[in-house]
Image 1 (cartoon, rainbow, N blue to C red):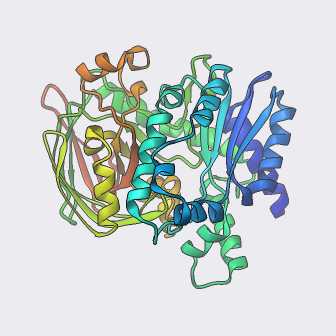
Image 2 (image 1 turned 60 degrees about the vertical axis):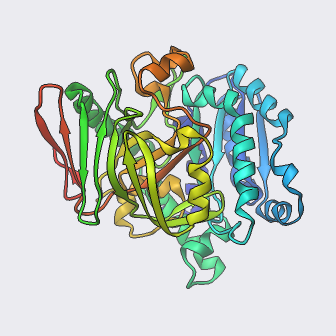
Length: 411
């Protein structure tokens, strides 16, 4: 039986070999909390063994982040460091892979002035717009994974000790990423093949619109643009190298027509956005735009998110995830979008992935606009899946197909 250190080592290897699929001579850039130093060293070891040219790490520390928000003046958050953005673009131009370890304490900035958070989100999004093209257009391989941190673990498991919370969260992460199985790489290969079958069916049907209905009040019609492409599991970068952008991943996704969303949708899980929770919220759409919203928790944070730019009021992603996915069956609310979005059907406010429309990765911003592709400085997933969610697809010929029934795939 494998012990913890064996599984941790295999997890690091999976990030390099399957997530990034690092190639010989390729740089690797890692973003990580300082609590993840031991894990990052394992990732770096496997990266160098795979022939990495270099491994560069950008560290972050939540204690310092909170200290900065509590003490620094507003002007600091209104200006993102250009050298940081330039550095990421330089690595991207050199063909680097980008591994992000996302492990935020979901309530880290709960007491912080939301205007500072909004200012920082906007300045960072503007400064990193050039870099984001390398990842959102799949020019470079990228992958997002998680490891437990003490702050996050205690939010998920508040009724146990810190040590026990960390242990429980590690176990949950290992289960969600198939690391608890005898052959994780083989299990991932089987899983990716299953997602590919769903992708192929949806792309063959070329649905014109989707209709979401749930007993919680969701009644939303979503048009899909001509030439839209469903994707899921993994994809290929410009060098034709297959990589998996999210681990775990249970979703199959595409883009909506920017102006083609109408009706009401209710959230079904809390959204961790920039160290704050937004929960029990409702969005009303007309001709693709949010025209009204409510939130029982995090109203001001949601308001600032929607006000970031015009594109933040429109959807950029439509993602299908079965209610009986392994993450959903764990009955754990991770308060971490990487996991919670893979337990539930979801949408994203903001920028669409250009790769979700035929030829989109080679189109200019103006060309994408004419195709009905949403653009924004942000891309924020929020969960809408429920155990009785129904999704019916309609083709150009008027054929109606039940895609989801009682929260799960109907085919």
